[in-house]
Image 1 (cartoon, one colour):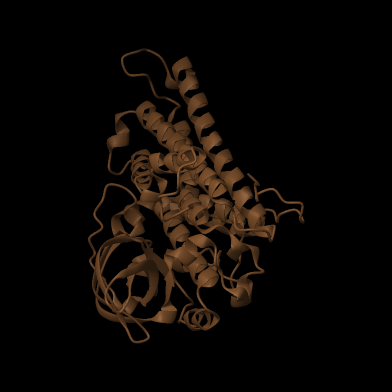
Image 2: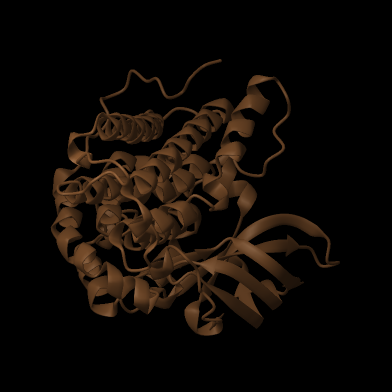
Length: 404
């Protein structure tokens, strides 16, 4: 099969270190406020505003609209830095940048103009976890008669919500799945996010009742995953990036930074600690050295897999060739799956070697460990799905997933 990740065009753009530095400058403050973020259940408003001022929610926004239009490699590095401060902050940044990418890659110019003119700029979140929705076709669009969605990360800071909805015809038959942009004032936030990890994402459930959505604020999911982008931005590589692997890998970026923080916490605590039941200092123990060697290898391997996938996405988008073939997209999902599994194994080993203190609600290792474990429960990051997608295609079986 032809691999469209290979190209003889100009070399791909590198990482924009200035953008990454913006994120890095905030890491000490974010880390120092992790307890506050966790307790509040969302990013504090003043901290969110500073992230906003530094453009860290505008990585997917076009330069001609005041954004940074960062490539995938730069997005990886910047969001991983935010995850190094606090995983919830990095997670929300990933979601909001994904929402912006969908707006500027798939919606028509006049909708981009309208939403960009929202006071404070477009600040989108995504509600893809549809619990139930009753939708009917109406003149000029759709009416969401009643709908409920779960896990709406970043909703407390958004002004638009990208809702997954069923698309139906005039007789009520399902024709496609779609994404509808709905202003936040038409949404009821349930304030029901009470979890053991990722508490600071504010991933509350939401309700929508009797809301009309004009047709130009709806895009079919089939267009998203077939690589159909708006002609106005088709020449910008970022908006030609393969949608499913981009949106999936973006949610993994902050986990890489959080995993590094877990290592830092563990190493900082080693001096003076004794192995329980033995008269041996942990920092001098061969067991500790073996554990740290394996843990760091796993996290470095995960980072390398993600870095190579980001490079492949950028190369394909910059090649001005065909949309990335399904097997190449599935290969990235497979590599994401392995990276997630390596991170899970590494942080579980870290928590075990750290000891019972990791069970403490206020312990920094415990918080990072729980955040990472909850993050890896997200449907896009469950390893078995990514492995199956690739294995199924490699075995010559038809694709059965809506995504990829």
